[in-house]
Image 1 (cartoon, rainbow, N blue to C red):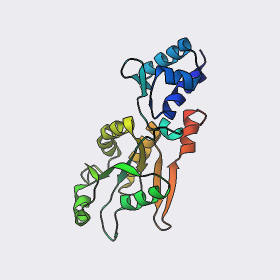
Image 2 (cartoon, rainbow, N blue to C red):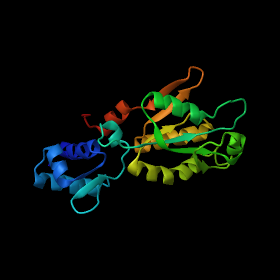
Image 3 (spheres, one colour):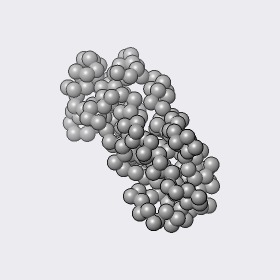
Length: 217
């Protein structure tokens, strides 16, 4: 059986928002029923595809495949960023990143921010509408501690959302932990060049397509 046929199945699911029934996958992939069944079983054994109700299949994670391929219906975005202490800043780093992402057509319905209780206190006057993942300051200087705090919530978000990660702020260990997670799960990752107010893609759509090894539609 040709491995590229598994890619056709993945692309068919991704282009349909990550969930589709057997007949829709068959039509989109161009594979006959027997070959399609083989590749669906193969992808299930690899943990890439899951079965829902009888005859319906879904990608285990919507990120990165629904990001690499045009998805209908559109998969909602979720943002996962870092926030440091206020010091001399007038606005928190996630606010700037979210505004720049919006200019590129990415508006996140869910916003998760990894930060310390001290930083939350610094910015409490803004009443920021974020979901907090709190790490104590001694945890923010440990890569493994940050990664262990973030990973469970990240895996939940990846199932039904396109996740974009932002490693602009906070400590170097936290930044490295974010980069490691983005590499592991093939998640788009940005960094804000604050002096120029520019968004830099550290892990881009093109990077993900190249690493996945599939051809975009």
